[in-house]
Length: 293
Image 1: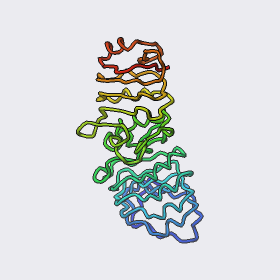
Image 2: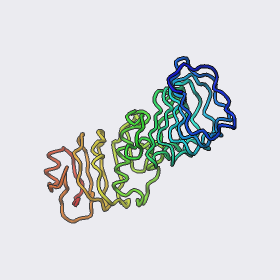
Image 3: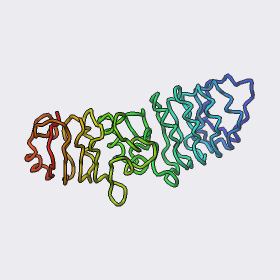
Image 4: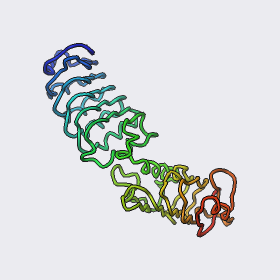
């Protein structure tokens, strides 16, 4: 029934069609109006549920979590409002596409939506009013490696890129094994408040990362080089390997990053470069020495 000229209120569906598996009345020329009745959420066999491109108002009922067979749920381009129910996360495992863009939703984007990424769901939330009440989107939604597609990934307000860069660093350095990882990878806490991270006065850019003697291992992620305001990097007394990336800014200080006795660092690749050469190339001061293998 998509792309027709249906109008009027969304009907109250009878129990005789509760076994319905597909309901697509999207893109109506006139537009279906009204709001959802509680009865519609009894359609627990529905796999395709699309009412996009209508004039539906009201909110998404909490009972949405009961529709666990849903594979596509699209309410984009309506005038729905209020906050998103956390119960949407209960659709993880079946849902492949969640379309809620072009409405007037507000409030905090539920962290439970991050559960949808476990099955590679695509999540579309653009052109709502989350800016009014939500500083950032949940971290798990913003990490491109975690979710099939999230249309706000490149929104630097809701998905700060430096938070993603630090998250990559955390994973590469085996953050789950750190001695102290307070606030790291929290869905909402600002990355400037993560253990060892210092930001500028505007709380926008990382200026210092100090995780000395904190049980770091694994590899040094190249994403750390994207922190363009970094002035101090101190990862001394850890067991991290890899190469120091080519920073897009001049570091004031780089402290010992590995445990080796050889006084060499690796810069931007496999070739070993002396600390004095690095200082000359990137204009930073090395206060102690080690090797990144």
